[in-house]
Amino acid sequence: MARTPLDQIIEWNARRGRPRIPAEFSYHIESLKHHWDGSSQESMEAELVIRRLVTIIEVFVRESIRELVDAGEPYSARAEKIINKMKIDYSFIMSLHGRLLSIGDIVSHTISVNDTNQIVTNLSILMPDFSNDLKTIHERWSDDQSRWPQKPILRNVDKTLAAIASLFQVRHIVTHEMPTEPPFNINDIAKFITQSNLLIRAIDWIIIKELHGSVPRTQLAMNVAAGEALSQETDRMKKLLAKVRRRGVFDKKLFNQNQQLWKKFSDNYASLRASGVAGGSMYPMIYDSALTEITKERCDHLLNWCELQEGEF
Image 1 (cartoon, helix red, strand yellow):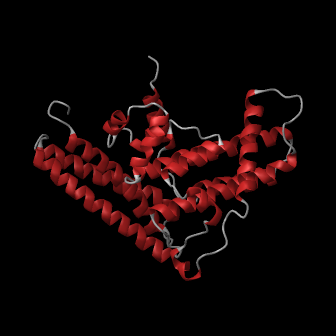
Image 2: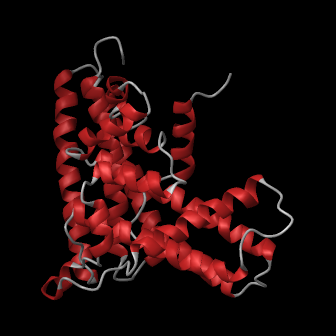
C-alpha cells in the first residue's frame, strides 16, 4: 500500500526523533566547515558539502516553521495564509492537532524550503517583521541586555540571500544534471558555508526574539530557565491527568499504572540524554530540557484523550 503524505511526515518525525535545539544547526555547519577545511577540497568533496549544506538549511527551516506554528497564537492563525496557498483544508489540519501530527508538522511539510524567496515569504507571513529583523537581529542573551543593541549578525542581507540562492541553484545542478564542468568555483564553498551559518544564526535569534524575547547565557541562569520550563509543563500535565480521570473512560487502576510506567520511562529518557555531561554543570539543564520535551509529548496524548468522543478510544 502506498504511503500517504501524512504517513511520510510521521516517519520523518520518527527518524528525526525530537524537536530542534537552538544553535544545533549552526553547530552542524561548524562541523561541516571543520570537515571541509581538513579535506582534499576536490570537486567531489565539494559536491557533498553543497548537498549537506542545503539539507541542513531545509531541515532547519521546516523545524523553525513547525516550532512557530505550534507555539500557538498568533502564529497558528497566520499559518492559515500559508495553508490556503497550498489548497489544503484548514479544518482538517486543525482536527489533527494534539494527535500524531501537529498543525506545525503539516504546514512545515507543505512549503518550499529550497527557494530563498519562498523561505523569506513564509517566515514573513508568520513573523511580519521578519525582513526588517534580518537587517538588525543580534544575539539576544538576557545577560547582555544593558549592552543592546549590538552589531547585527548579517552585515549585508542581500549578499547573504544571494549566496544562499546560488547554493540552491548549484545543488540542483550537481544533483539532477551531469555538467561537463563543475557549476561552482572551489573558492565558493567557504562562502556557502559562511553565509549559510550566518543566515541560520540570524533566523534562530529572530525566533528567539519572537517566542522568548531573550535567553540566558550563564549556565546557572540556563539551568534555572530549564527548571522553570519543566515546572510549567509538569503543572499542565497534572491538570490534564485530572481531566482524563474525571472523564472516567479508562480503568482507573490501569490508567494510574500507565502514568507510573511513563514516569519511570521519562526519568530514564532524561537521564540517558544527560548522561553525556554527567557530573558537569550542564547536567541539570540537559536533564530538565529532555524531561520537558517528553512531558510535552505526554500532554499531547492526554489532550487527545480528553478530546476524543465516546467510541473513538
